[in-house]
Image (cartoon, rainbow, N blue to C red; front, top):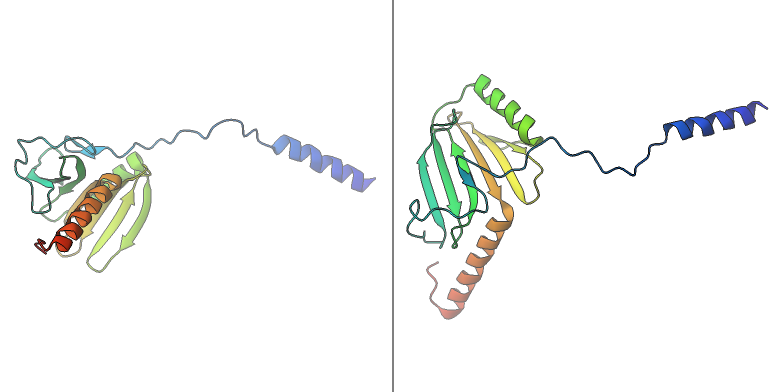
Length: 178
């Protein structure tokens, strides 16, 4: 009788505890990685900001940035079609621990942290779970400055693949500048 009671009790408990999984997963509270400093990943870089292509065929813009301390410079990289694949905010001077911690906390709240790696001369913290996009905060040991880099990995990979194909064709033709 005790075994039957225990079995019935366990079955009842299992029924009460079973979850109805017909609902979709709750939406994440984290934002998508889209860009920074007025630049949007995947959008065209204004011709006025970078008139001539670089040697690699892509476009590059570097400017002052004062709207978001501790960062004071912005670097924008775009492919041969001027499509932005990378935006880096950079601090040109030492960032104290309290400011760095506050920034990390804010980025974690906004995007979610996905990894923290110590390298030889830097620390990299990765944020966000936007497909094919990355956001990396790098703290450089030499001067305690920070870089915050937003990247569209799909555009970057396509650009690098195009460069590799162009270089390979030039080598075959004997016109490479490598």
